[in-house]
Amino acid sequence: MDKVSFFILNVFLNSLLAFFTVAFLIEGIIFLFRIPQGRIAAALRMIPIFKLPLDLCLYDFTRWSYAQGVNPLNCEEGTRTLSVTLGSMSCVTDWLYLPITSGIELTVQGNMTFTIADILGYTIKPEFLKIFCFTFLVISGALFFKRLIQYNNSIASLNAFAKTAMASCRKLRNLTLASCVKKYRFQILTPANFSGSPFVAGLVSSVVYIPEKLSQSLSRREYEAVLAHEIEHIRHKDSLVRLILDVIETIFWWVPTRWLHKRIEEGHEVGCDLNCKKYGVQPLDLASAICKSVRHSIKGEEQVFVHHLTKHTVFKRVNILLKPTPTRLRKTRFAFTLLAIGIGFGIIFLGRFWTF
Figure 1 (tube, rainbow, N blue to C red):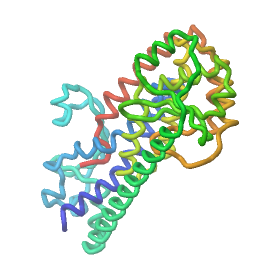
Figure 2: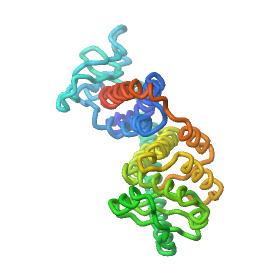
Figure 3: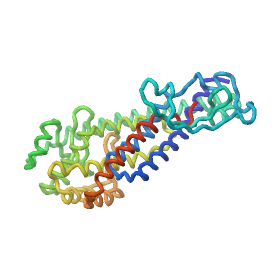
Figure 4: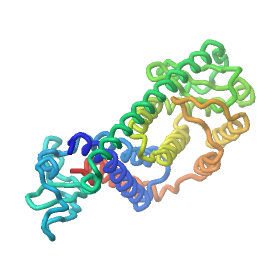
């Protein structure tokens, strides 16, 4: 049977199993350690998505039973085992100097590994398996090409905004914000033909877009609050992160990442909201600006590279802004956060789940 077809089937099925396993573990960590919605929670939730391409590099073909000509279905009873490991060394992590790893794998006698996809592949006729792989590759190529067209259309749309939009003439009294505008060297444009929420676009040179009607309705403090929020997006390179996530999700189109992506973007928004305090912005002013953005938002053409404000997240963002964290919980939350990051990135991210 064609080894390439078998490997494609493994990538298809193993990616699904690994994604759900890692997502379940990450959500468990977030719940167990009471990680609030924000930057840290968003970073942890990116692990299941970033792990999809990483897993392709963690396959160990030297231990793959199929490559050695061993059919796990023909092995003697009692020689097939399901192993769940935590804290073992492997050749994958030796060169990273990581003493701890984790994994879930199926093994047969001789320490050879097999997968659920292998078992499924042995039950499918070779002709059907090749048809599946050919169809899978065609769909993957078509979807990726379609996404490239959407990228091109979004870039053209943003360029059209930039040509017709006027540069903002509003002066900033907040000296901290004024210095950040000079430091990051970004433009502030107010397009008249756009009705939506403010956003940042640009991977190299950033541009902040604030719709003209919305800009006129914002008070000075609300305007500065919006600007502080967008500066946080620029500082954390959220446009680049969003693009990388989108490319991975396009390549692994069969993995249902949409719900997780929404939670990640929500975490970015909440993180930006909470960090606005260091610019001297009052939470009430930012909450008011968010509500006004919702009223001025009209459903239109979505841009690939920007985050679009959704009404179902507004209440949560405003509630978090106006509900301060008790001081007595900050030290405990900091310790739990460090522990969650260590487990998430040190153990789960480099783990081998359901692969050979």
